[in-house]
Length: 440
Image 1: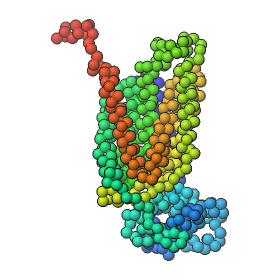
Image 2 (image 1 turned 60 degrees about the vertical axis):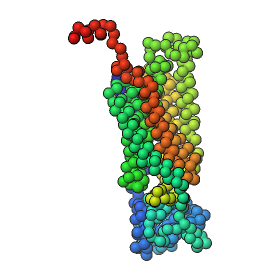
Image 3 (image 1 turned 45 degrees about the vertical axis):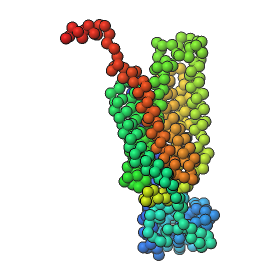
Image 4 (image 1 turned 45 degrees about the horizontal axis):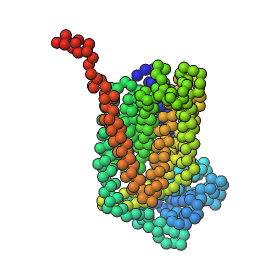
């Protein structure tokens, strides 16, 4: 692999890796917080020393809230200083802050801390509370209180036998199969030096690592580790980005011949005149510019969708399970990823306007870097909003789609094995055959 191709792959790697949101990491690592399980224990054992504040709007609070929680809406806390009356309420007490997802609670907790109030954010908010309370034996937290003083059971959905079977089948059988196959594909390409095969090899490696981060999160962290889920998401971003880069290299090398100065472009019959030999505009390049701009516009779609909190408990073959898709994940999928994808696509279109030979290489890198967050964002966006009332099918179809993807990669390798493994299928020349006979 030549210097330019190595540089291209490294650049692509760092572009996608740059999607680690430093601000979000700073907020979560530096905001004092407690888990929902810990908050329940504190409230049960030291309730006289604790104030639980629900920072949702009043109409949300009235629909259902935790017993003993008082309502001070988020907007009031952030827009006004804490009044002396409230200071007395918090005097010598610890404050637990809860919101829908734990995200808004970060800012409120920091606000209280600035006012010298000992405050802690409940990590995951009500999404995590529903899951923890569903497993807990603490009676006061097995339900929510309404504005009328009634008790409202925690969200629960009965899963059909077929849904339970599919959930177990895809998670415990299908997932290990296709992740193992992805690692085998990685091993098949590990000795290949061509940039297209290197990119596909890296795509399979990141897919394998990302899916195993998901498995580790489920097996060891009860699906509650933000870090493991982030590594899972990042694995998918890398997978999509490197796979598209590899496909662009394959299409150019075996079909378009755009980057090869010695070969005629396959679209010459349409363009009539070629930019390689005459000072004319390249039709293929103009199409690619349009595709980049169109993708940049399409990437905006998830940005205008709302972030929705869904969390409910169920039972899968006798085992308790909570289905949710935390808002903090949606922020990454529907805000950060689309914005990054749009920027990458625009940069690719700008680079294609330059006639420098390196511009085309970097345009491919930025285009591939944009497809990683774009595909991932739309993949999760479609599944979540399509199955928001039954998240079991979101998880099932995510596993099924990933299985189909790996099966598709494996099929392409098999159908074009004579090209991919050409050394194995290459027939010896007459000179080679005579030389082999002489050696004998």
